[in-house]
Image (cartoon, rainbow, N blue to C red; front, side, top):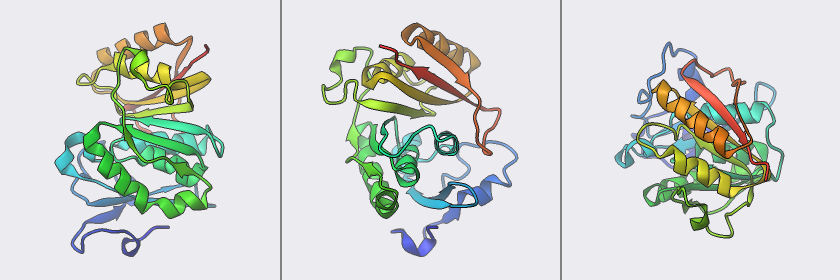
Length: 245
């Protein structure tokens, strides 16, 4: 497992093991751990635990800190074996890159991390921190890149269009985001038969209902799945969509 001496952090950086914090958490406070420089996350269960270390940067705003949804989504996908080694995965709105890096470092997936330009250096930094774990698992993470969502699927570059088996979006759906653009970007980047997992922190129920309506109109298969993670909460829901054509 990773430890404080194995990561590149300032001497006075505050670092903690996420699972120990989560075990004593009586409610979900999105910012409770934002003051820490780095967080160690564990995946894989008691028989074989893999730790990855993710740095945060509060100066970047909400996208520069880790949200519980990213850990919950990655934990669900790993424990339920929703991917296999070599699965081509795209993470949208990756922020720190936690979910995608976890799938590469634990599941051996081939991952592409994307977000707005200001978050790319942080994703690159976190990838470098966990490169040994990624290589050990046989995974791969492309150099993180910028990807703006759009309702016009033609703006997605040809090399990204229909290129991915799985698309992830962790806590990207809120009233300040354009969920239509997110769903169309997912549709554009998924292969036929590919699936996307959208982990939503339910803040405004009416907005989530609108997301489900749009997803059902765009995808033939859009369902709410049970979150198979010991870290699940009533504040989160998981939407799975499948592109059929």
